[in-house]
Length: 225
Image 1 (cartoon, rainbow, N blue to C red):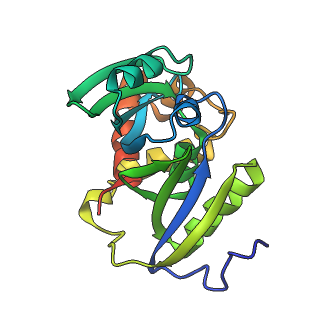
Image 2 (cartoon, rainbow, N blue to C red):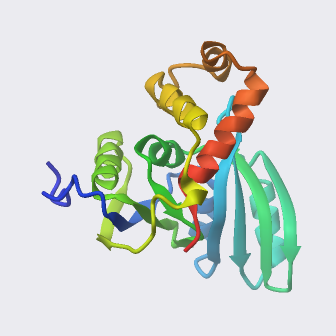
């Protein structure tokens, strides 16, 4: 068992863990920080965009003295599928960027962990604040280690965040859909069931299920303290 696992794993109290995760090579964020060490960056949110093709959509904010160069580098990066500006100032941009959905997002969904946005990025590392029960956080960190994800647990402790807040509560139908998706391996890597196959098993259209899953994921992943 890993040294960060606690004997208090079964506690239902809200726990917050800060982890530092290194972005893999070939991702636009990694290359930006490799070329420009003075970039300031935050991921304001990240959610699935196309569940069938595993494409995610992020809203990102960057501060740098050469904004035109930042735009050019991101737009032309092979890992970027789509780029669109939301706001622009002299030394700051906010933009949408669509990329392949990372394993981290599916990991937090499977384990029932909330991500406290915005996520700060420094030197090619993401600093994630994860909120859930201690048991769920330990489960997720163990899974990351088994998958070979390069992360470091920086701190862990109690938080006053209410995990039963109305904004994170799922309806019975949503709970059944989420559990079915997890049980059938929809959030596994590689995926064990397609969106269409899952929709057929649930008796829903593919488009309806896609909309419902995005709503579920937003409730169960995003938080802003």
